[in-house]
Amino acid sequence: MKKPVVQFEGFSFQYKAQKNPSLAGINLTIREGEKVLILGSSGSGKTTLANCINGLIPFSYPGEITGSCKVNGRETRELSVFELSRDVGTVLQDSNAQFVGLSVGEDLAFSMENNCVDRETMRRRVRENAETVGMGRFLAAQPFHLSGGQKQKAALGGVLGEETRIFIFDEPLASLDPRTGAAAIDLIDRIARNNGGPRRTVIIIEHRLEDALFRPIDRVILVDRGRIAADMGPSEILQSTILAEKGIRLPLYISALKYSGCGLGGIQALEDINALELGPENREKLRGFFPAPPSGPGKKNPAGNEIIRAEGVGFSYETAGGGRQPAVEGACFTISRGERVAFIGKNGAGKSTMAKLICGICRPQKGAIYLAGGDYRRLTVKEIGERAGYVMQDPDQMIVKDIIKDEVELALRLRKAGGALIAERGAKALEACELYRMRNWPVSAVSYGQKKRVTVASVLALEPEILILDEPTAGQDYRHYMEIIGFINRLNEQYEKTIIFITHDMHLAIENTDRALVFAGGRIIADGDIFSILADSRIVEEANLKATSLHVLAGKAGLPAEDFTRRYIGYEKALLAGGEGPRADSFRGGGAR
Image (tube, rainbow, N blue to C red; front, top):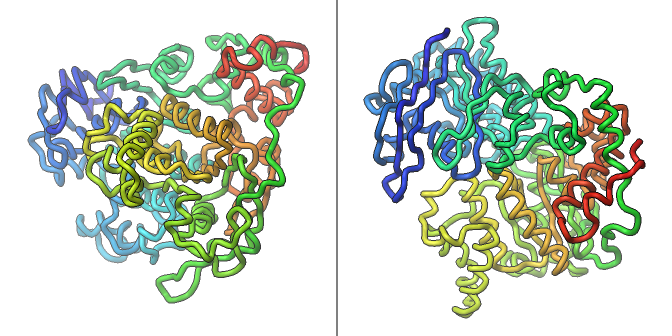
């Protein structure tokens, strides 16, 4: 048996600003060369656990420690962060907190400079690492001018310069498009395998279980309320009920198999959708379970009530060399009042820039944008903000107040709203985002996922007609995802709020949108139904998308992927509706045979 490299024994930790421990009674051993996935809901203690390993606790986040936490046999509290960094390399969830160089190249070279690597070797390794993570042409770029996904890739490249044997990746997929996310998981797997040398120890903290299983995992550790709730192999935990009980979303293909009554225990390679073998009996169960959607009209896409129109919109950013880098080119589209639209596509394709153009943060250099039929060039950013609310991808770029309640109420106070209105709307937004009990907490004391909910609440408090959410599900566990998306969908259905999701989460797109605009290279290459788009291999390839696991499962069952996905989503919506609308039983029939 290989030697332990991380050991927790009776370990507890309580932050200085909190009354109760964030970790309690942790007993955990991770051995040399293991690849471990840590799951848990937002605020469950996952990141706290990682920060105890890399030394950020207690040196950057003070608090009370009891018990033992050892890395390579040494107590972490007796080591400095610098000493621990020789053993543990970390890619933080918040990429902005990790950059130290003025350019991507400088940042990738930083650890090698500290280790006195000779200049030629350093230059070669920087180029190699940049190419590995797809940032080879961005070596001269300033990190803070990159898109969220590009920042994540740059941070991933930076950790490759370390000579460490233990790597921690905190939410490595949070800002990556589906194809790049798969490449990141593949890269992490290669880091673990170490080119055939001694395997490195890898710890991945991630909400997106389905995507994290793209490459083999040795163990899945489930953290719940600061305690270890499960420590199992991936196949074992997928067959259990504990993930659903603790608010972790199952991979779509596992849900489909469970709904149809397939025997998971008899399926080979259950944790790998591409390798699993269904067998004739399970194929027949899948083919018979998901019938045609119920007859009658579904939700109609609004028409003739235009709220946003873009005509030939173009915008480019100034580069470090004084040139211009096109971000959006020739964008033409209309969005009707009450529509739910997804902006999807590869990192840096222009999705977030288009959102900033709609909100007036940037203004078109070519073409024009109309809001509710009027040219918005006459409106100030503040006036546009009362019509179109924008929740940014990085919560730290939005939050300016120290206390959660103050942040949520800030926009109303700046507009000199009455005290009663401020209290009413603030409380309503806090409750919708499940933050009311934390309203008097300092922002610094909450997790990244909770910060995301703070920014959503701060925009909801203004009750804008148009709500634009940039990666709203990044850093969110399934329970909070359902609560926030459920609330946003009610705003859409009951008050005709227009919703735009900028997302790499194909689950979100297929479940909660009426239509998708696909961006690639600054242009809109497709505009239409999300199910049809994901079934078009040309669009999927050009936009760095990835078909969901339902598409792969449908192929293994001998069913048309687009049709199977529609029927699965219809069935799941019926389950969620409960007593409202068609019951799940009404979906059972012979239509899918």
